[in-house]
Length: 394
Ligand SMILES: *Cc1c(COP(=O)(O)O)cnc(C)c1O
Image 1 (tube, rainbow, N blue to C red):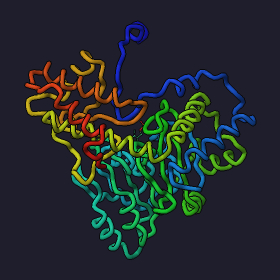
Image 2 (tube, protein in one colour; image 1 turned 135 degrees about the vertical axis):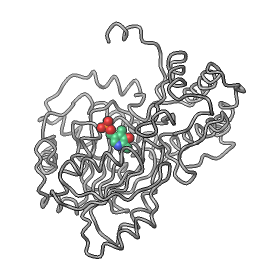
Image 3 (cartoon, rainbow, N blue to C red; image 1 turned 90 degrees about the vertical axis):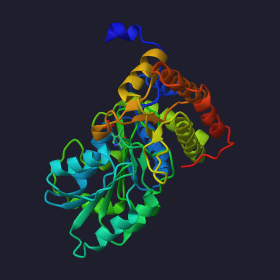
Image 4 (cartoon, helix red, strand yellow; image 1 turned 120 degrees about the horizontal axis):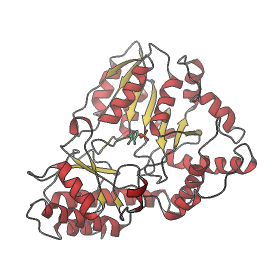
């Protein structure tokens, strides 16, 4: 890598994680090390919990783990359940399936409530399935707030209402959505909500955040899946002393502290509005350029737009042209959507100029691939949304 690294050209990253990180956040990572069992770290941890709580919509514990998002999800499963527990998984794509796989790995019996790709979970279908569980054999429900592989966002308020009467413990993968749209963990009644540093909070990867309800703590005491590094009881015990159980990725904590300061200086609403506006602008541009949006109209994500390119344009070739000729990096599809869609993220330190520039580059790349493009049709559609002449829709 090093040789190529030195020759690296300017790139615009539009991945759904990791995302572009602002310079002051990057620079915080160069601060000197401190004692992670000392008063400065305790102060840092307290500020981070206070910074994350409104983003989760909770006044409960928010714990920080040294891992990517998957580590946080594994933590949720391993701490809340016992081998043999029956869980209902409600996946809408690759990440929902991965959460179910984690539960199976730990010996849980996982039933899957299927949803067609591109759609959000049907709250009515979920409510009906739970109503049939009169004996309350379902101990837990595995949900995804925002499914990065399909560009679909679930209506978590509606799903919470569908679950409430049943009372099963809920685990929510909010890794790629938290911080980009309102989330009210306490009001909606979710139990364990997991996020990670490298998505909408716009920090390098390395920290998972796990918010835990009071009810979840009771389940955690009873659960018998073995756990050591990712033991939430230990995490809480140390958090009360202003520490993490194990040596934390201190540099990423510095970055997170600065990112949260910036996040709250802008305010929750401004952050939510920006993601919605960007996603709306990207969808408008894609449509103007002949792409088909993959998510159904009532299920659009605000953090990632998935779309099928115009006919005759191969996904991999388009992504390669965009990357090599213009330094614009988008994602392809995952799993069964490989080669069928491209995905463009809205998260991170992305300006409106970056966004319009990237869409302009997509026009150029399409032309390079032989598509008869009307230059300005994509940027015009995006500009109309960004300028507010067309309201951004979720
Ligand atoms: C990114 C992501 C994850 C976590 O992936 P890691 O690579 O472990 O950080 C989990 N769920 C969703 C929906 C994601 O987008």
